[in-house]
Amino acid sequence: MGEGTCFGYEVRSDLPFSYLRGGRGDSLTVSAGTVGPLEDEELLQEWCPPSVPFRASLLGNGRTYRLWVENTGWMGIDPANSSIVVPEHADPLRVEERLWGMPALLCFLDRGDVPLHAAAVEVDGCAVLVAAPGRFGKTTLLSALAGRGLRVLTEDLACVRTDAGASWVVPGPAMLRLRRDVADAVLPMGYQEVGRDDDRVHLAAVSDRGDCAPVPVHALLFLRENDGPPRLSAADPGASLPDLWQVSFHLARDGDRARCFRGLADVAGSVPLFDLWRRRELDDLPATMDQILELTGG
Image 1: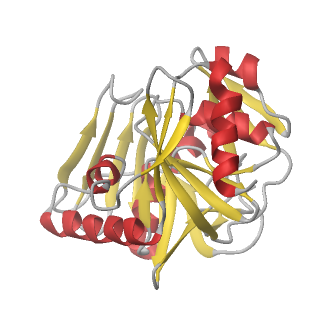
Image 2: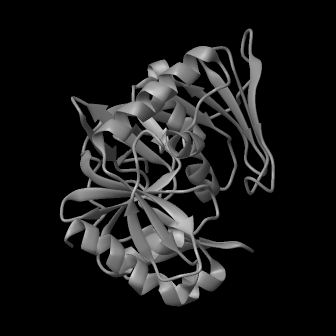
């Protein structure tokens, strides 16, 4: 059952999990139950296709939250007490994947970490973050890097910790979700299929999961599109703040916006930033990976 870590949390639960890592961490209780309305709650945010693959709504009162996700149900999040309630009788794999999205984000945000819409891979003991909006090719690139034997730290949501002018990635779930056509072309060794739907193949790492010890960040790459061969160019930290803002998360309140901006400024001031220009073509993946490995010396 729930024994392992994710995003620096050690999970306490009777529920089954497929994507946990080893090691120890802060306690996080995950239980199944019914989530009712909160006192003084308000609608904080809504998501709808096509910007996201499913509908979702977040409600809260500044202390606790309720998240409704289409085809999953209601989740309750209490960040101060590191507790999450998930729907009863829902598909376990779908619940876990939703759990390691917004509910976990709200918990580690309360802990003081910075959430980024980014993938991360470990190269020679350091993390490389690849940031981009959803459905922009992050996971395809990540799976190809995993195929070269690199440890995937997180697929889509990065937990970044900053302190004393440095930044670290706290590893997330040991999973990959690939489009079915991409999975046939770049399915990495060391992963096994744990689920499949009309759009995605769901994969869990079976080797080299590691633990959730923070990994120092070597670089952050913004995925860009062009018509030429893959290339890297240095990005100006100040000019990159709007790009970081685009891949960050903040609630529509002044205090949350200020907190988010401070966190992003800390990241920009402590991590080398680059633009990675490439075409979203499978044939370009080897050259794109070479650019990343050349940057890191891997």
